[in-house]
Length: 364
Image (cartoon, rainbow, N blue to C red; front, top):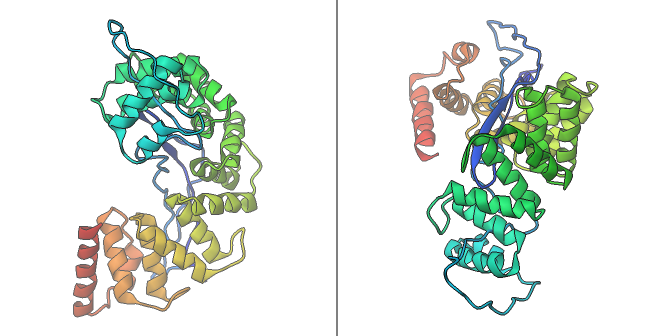
């Protein structure tokens, strides 16, 4: 008996990040069906649309190579060029990683000014855009990103593209943003490939081209970008821009899940539970649902409540099931079938479950 129904994903969203943040929400075509309801223990959970993947909630530090940035030195002041540092030691990025932003700012300023180092310029853009060690100044951030972009730094190209889309540090300029993003993607930046794919999918900034979107998602997914892996999985699941292939979809969900994408964890957990595109493993599926539920995913909380209520893949535990059902409902994930199924829980046990739910919400 299947207690969990795969989620039909109808939206691909992202938080575009790099010196400044801008959000783009895109919706690929997806089937929309309703689950059958039964009075007795339901066989399927209601079909849900998960919340869009959150690409990054906070600008991440540069990838494998440092993303330094630099601050202008007053032109009226003459400063003797310092001795060059060991090029094999990246003091700027080291300071950035340790949270010593003022030190990173000073070191990046020196490198950008005397060495014309594009990575240092990018770091300055990052620091100015995110108020790290200096007061936030989008205009200065855009200036440094522009200098680094002109010097060929792919991270700066992507960051400046996001600022142009958001209208930070200057007017909105979608044409320039697309050019910068395309250049960054061409230089191998998976974030740029992913976001460019979404622009092709959206069909507003660029003409809609689902196949091109799928190609770019594949590039980013192959580079290990979990948001791209999750988005491409939905393409294979629905047959959007690519031939429908559940096995490929599940492999991509697994990869994104391992990389920490919570929405992918929910989908992969359901695939494991039902044995769809992967060997059936209810225990592993429930464990992954529990992991996602603890990360405050309402869909995972609802599915976990179901398996605990019906005792499949885990020992039945109506108190714990009611707790997660109560938590999911507080996040807007109501489930009338579970309401009915758990109606016979004793008042004392119901009080325990609700108290545990309130404690969970208070501690999250």
